[in-house]
Image (tube, rainbow, N blue to C red; front, side, top):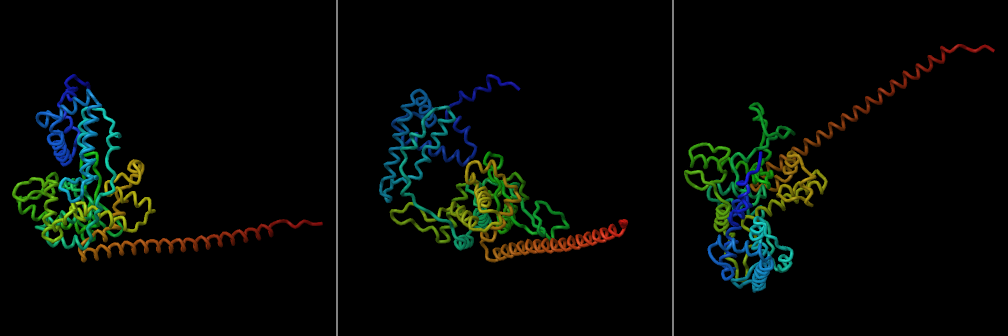
Length: 425
């Protein structure tokens, strides 16, 4: 295999094409494009000229030729944004300082993909302190239960229960039917596959969902039996609309109608916003307040994190915490945890099963989950008791055997003394 001259043409593409080439997620691509367009066309309207594509090329090429000019543009942008963050919170131009880094992420990606050097530490040093950011909280189990009553069809129920029991980000909802895999429990054994003869004795312990499949960020998430059952209910609606069983590669969540069109993240967020309004949980913000106490989608992720972290584990606190961080798609306690602490999938499942009762919303399903955990603990206790009893039996057997050996040794010694000839004086 050889590299030809035409293979090098990627470097001669226009800057915006290279920018897109470096973004894998469709949602990230759309978000970065919106932000970059706003900066180049609006904020830098009097600095750059031409179309959006022309302005991107100008910013890249001028910064390549004159890095001081590029730095001055970035510092000016940071200064303007910082001024907005210092306005009163009830001012329509107020900008939360936590959002300022988001304005620079697409520019940094544009520069990196076009090999434009810039000392970003100098730019970041000008960002304002994050001392006026509003703290949010997680949904409570009771709030999610209330939201479930106002869902529009099985799809809303499935979205909410998947979000609450997996803690995935809204971008992780880009799932296919083949990305879901149930985990069965037969006695004290966990398995992905069961035979027909095992079906009666098998129960759904949880299900694995493959998030960000076929990307560098791919990781296994988990959902409760309650959430898995909600997906099976939604599947009936899916089949009713399309008229056939979904294929493994077809999207799990789709737009309403007779065609298989994926439901994008912004549409999922919009459905949750509608549910919140119907449930009376999204009243207009009071004057001076810009954010609701519970983020519409991130409130589910926070619920998952809180419920999971508060669940006791059989592992050491450190090992359990690393596994719980993996389930959130976090690196771990330190960056090297992901490389050096690779928990087996069944270890993660065992850890997740401890949290299932806390992640289950329905009172009836929660009782089932708690009973299952209790049965598992009883099974483990019985196994330990059997092991202890067996050890005691083994100890008694060893004692008896040692006694027999000792007795044989004593008899042998007596026989040896008798057999020795008597010495005459």
